[in-house]
Image 1: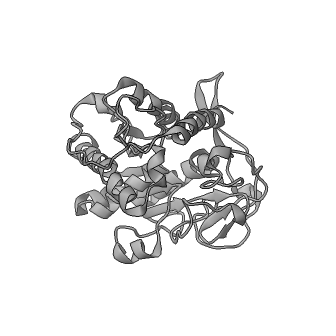
Image 2: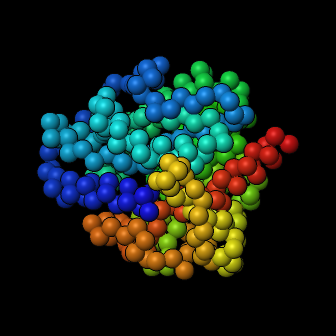
Amino acid sequence: MKNLRLFASCLAVLATFCLSCSEKKTTETVITSIDYSDSTYWYSCGDTTQAADVFYVYPTVSTLSFADNDSSWFADISLAEVREEANGNQRFNKMLYGEYNFYAPYYRQMIFEAYSQPAPVLDSLAQIAAKDVNDAFQYYMAHFNHGRPFFLMGHSQGSQMLIALLKQGLTEEQRKLMVAAYCIGYHVDAEELATYPEVLQPATDSTMRGLVVFNSVTDTAAIGMVSRGDVAGVNPTTWTMATDTVPAEFHLGMAKYNDARDSVLIVPCPTKTYLYHHTTVCPDLDPEMVFIPAYEDKFPKGNLHFADSWLYGGNVVENMRCRLRNYKN
């Protein structure tokens, strides 16, 4: 499965880098901004043939060792090879969400090592990546959107940055155009919901506008750092917070790259599901499915974080249609 190989190969290289890093890095402030009027910093500026848009933010993909600048916590997107590392993921998602105009900026994402830092350091570092995503989104709204409804879509660090974008605040006019924010593979805790009750309003059925969060494991013992403490997660086979066991036929298939057709197809992936502490449990799936031993402390065997962006491809695509229909009505 090409999408699994892609994640595994990137993470293996990243693991080697992170395990060999020195302690030379600093948290010195990065003050420059990205000029999103420059097409260099967009993977895709979409087209205008479709009636709605996707604004997509990719997960952690950077694997460079930054040998020439080991004080940097961020991917240097001025380098073509760094942008290229994000392209496989973005191309896959552009094909998966091909029913919509696809807008995807590059951003100075944090390298994986940042997630091992104390919370105050991590929060400070995250502000740089979040600023880029906010700047790109504001440029998209001012120059590309032209009043069309849009979806926010991300995975992992990409979802983290979209949640930050929602917190920073969309204008009232922008919020009227947002159909839903699919923040896959991340979390929202109770304090965040209490602090931002309107902008982080979870969508708790299949048609609501708002925030959509989900994370998956094969058993409850595999819940890792990404979803622990989440209070917003839904089961993506029902799009509700109900905890009942859902039959396998509700899973509409996973997204898989097809070499022969150079396209993304939806293929069967039967598994019953149930929601446990806002994490979706898929007991019929192989716990080795996307297991990376180097990350066992954060993503133990049975944690499906690296699959969440494509594991429910059929459900997500159909649900986007459903929410868009409801939005138009």
